[in-house]
Amino acid sequence: MNTRLAGLPRRQRLTGLWLLLCGVALLGGIGFAAWLDQRYHPQGLAQWLLWSGSLSGGMTLVLAGLALERWLFQPLRHLHAQLARLVANPDADCDQTPDGWLRGLGPDLARIHSAWRDDRRRLADARAEGACDTARVLGRFESLLQALNTPVLLCDRHQRLLLINQAAERLLAPHPGLGLGKPLDQLLNLRELDCHLTALPEDGSALEVPITHGNQRLNVEVCRLDQDQMLLTLSDAAQRPQRVMPPAGQEHASRRRIPPRPEFHDFAIADLPPPQADLADCPLPALNIVAFDTETTGLALREGDCLISLGACRVVNGRLRHTETFDQLIDPGRPIPAASTAVHGLTDQDVAGQPAAATVLADFHAYVGHAVLVAHNASFDMLAIQPDRHGPSFDMPVLDTLLLSRALDPGLEGHGLDSLAERYALLFPEGARHTALGDARVTAQLWLALLPRLEARGIHCLSDALAFQHAGATTQDAYAS
Image 1: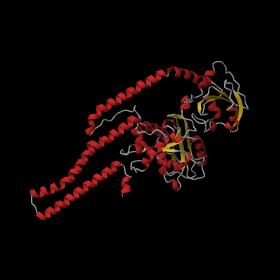
Image 2: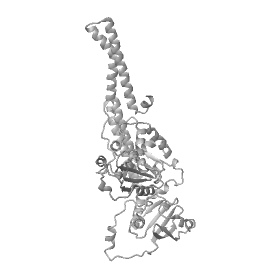
Image 3: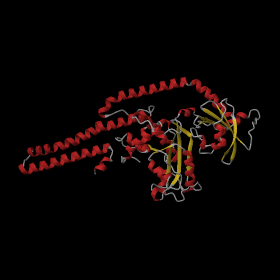
Image 4: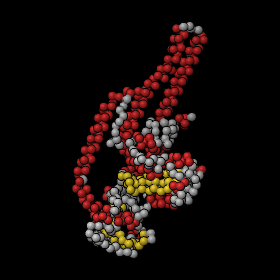
């Protein structure tokens, strides 16, 4: 019994204790009044006073509890949720004012929120003004790389990708190792390059090395820009690149047909801790995160239900990479029940002819690389992506936004994805709810929203977060889903 009570949220334990005390007081009063009534046989007003006095203690507890819940505890929970939202998303609207006995805090809270937003706006303006010259230089650099037909990669001293131009993306895609912040050795066969990388000239002159990339033979020209960065220029060894000038007036038209890539560089990746550093001590904002979600034929994964969709997105250097996504339907080899289709909208026709789970999971494992996984109710999704021991092993650390939310706010109800999206003002694009990629993106935004609240509690590195979320695992929240 004690173990069950300890597993309940704090509010449910307090409510249960209050009901118990009320019940004991009322039953005791009734028993005492009945004993006095039988012993002294009072009549009229005396009998009414006897029963009223005997029951007054229990009734006082009931009424006091109801009053405290309505005028104090419920406003406190609303204030708790509002403060959590403002810490996670200071730009969110403050549309609820405290009520009950906390009503007087409304103007003060609005003033604090307004001042907070003004300070953030001034700070953002100062940063933008200070970075104006750098932005202009980078803008010109980006324009040059957009127009350049030669595939180019830029790496930091830890061989992490800082820049990928569109020509390189066209040459190397689709490849799970292609992405900002990923190690170069996940993309190219560095065994053929290693001996040359250690002997790169300091004067910036280039070395040309032929390497194998899948079924391709590539020529890679490598040069050192400085002690911290390395530039790689790629070309197909079977077809030396030639610059063909289009007729006058057609060059800009051809460039317009190439869709612009909104994120193809991030030089701040070079400031992250080295990949070989102890991951447990890595600061939370510096983690390479893959947020993922699954859709399945049903909820009984241990009884035969299986994957039909897998979606993921990447958070690098504290920024959600909207273009570096993983989204794949899967043929489960069995019918999809109508009850499941009613949730995620996927039918047998949608998944017919799609790859099998083994193929998709191998590609997803390569996409994840050395990242930390993040999911909402991760125990379900982890079971979905490793149903047996024959597939790839997802043995990397896993953070669960459901458990983190429970541990942060044990007194609040509602830790499902819909409830938390509303609490932190996160938006699902139309039609994205209960799609693997749509839910993965909101989970990534939720992770970023939880970061400042975790740091405010002294949770700064991965090991801290893993230990902290364990507190949420012991709470059986009936409202979580």
